[in-house]
Image (cartoon, rainbow, N blue to C red):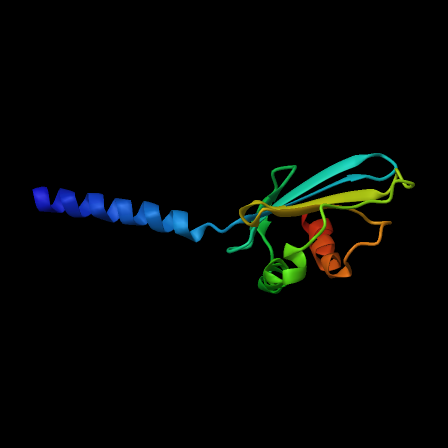
Length: 131
């Protein structure tokens, strides 16, 4: 009887630890601006592809989109992003903020500024899943 309880406790502990290992690092993307100064946000688990947005809609991005995101965040160019790519003359354009806290990487990007174009696919994924 004591052995069965011990096995149950070990199994539960193992399950809890494995569930915590399955969850990846979040990629957090926000957008504000435009004529109506609209705000949107999206958080994507970079290991599983599960996401939720500002309206608390939940789902999973496609495996192809997840692979695109993983390739971008593993790229050295992503790790070397400047903190800001802003155009101070345009106050009505969309401004994105991308942050990847586990790697301490992030940037604010104005779409009218000169920013790294490899980020465009992240913006496309964001626009599809954030609404």
